[in-house]
Length: 310
Length: 53
Image 1 (cartoon, each protein chain N blue to C red):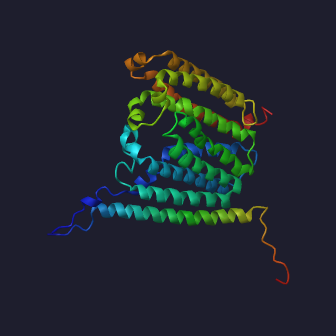
Image 2: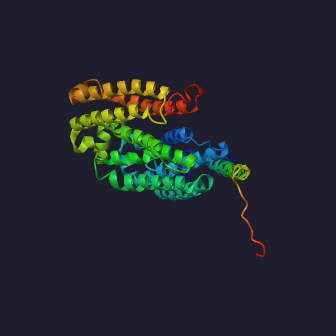
Image 3: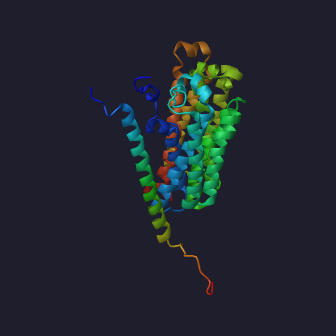
């Protein structure tokens, strides 16, 4: 060979590609809910300790994202939504993602033990294990209940935040857990309804594939009704308050109406308007979680709501 | 023919190295800040050394 070829390096990963392995969008939700858990707790935390602890929770969440991308590289390649991720795009080798995931998992759990306490670190370790092993490696490809049980992994961050502040886990922390846990199935099933070919192509046994789309629509309604009862009921717990009550009642009214509309539709009607109602329900679900936790935070930190509930 | 010293590859690698360097620097500062925060909190106690040991 007479000249030097750079072509082998053209697809080399940048720092941003390694960052993308950590699923920054999921990480931002983890950070937000963990911060709410931490600030809603009745024990004040030193700002530096709070910042460092939340950062380690974020790194732990990123680590589990990298492990998920390592394990799911084969199906990510098939699905349109995930085909541009760093591993299927050929920018990062699967082994690199595995190494990064394991290293960051160890680092985050160890550092959270030092900055906060053993309980918070133990919960983080369990969350990483649950997402990477129980959900990604076991449930995702074997049962249509994958996201129902797997949703627990996404529900742990506010519990970890609470544990960072108090060193314990009480019923209020589990209410925040339940809120995310019950929210996850309707959120993902709405996505599965309008991203139909993706999960079919990848052979992931989503409810839409195994039980049909009619059953999925019914499941969305049932979970939404249970979620609405839980979400509004939380307003009368120690983490609730007037802001939360108003926000929750409005959002749940819209959410239940959306779920009923999805349930009453058939596939022909959905295809005719390109899944308009399912897409708007999905968008609303994002706002739903953000505003519920925003309201918990508002009731915890705004001076005018303090003491009004208890 | 002049040799192009800077290729896109070099820029990318430089960006990666600078990024990792900044992260390590930030980590050192964070550990220092965490240590100061822990030590200056009211409940911090130095380990007691028994006399004669």
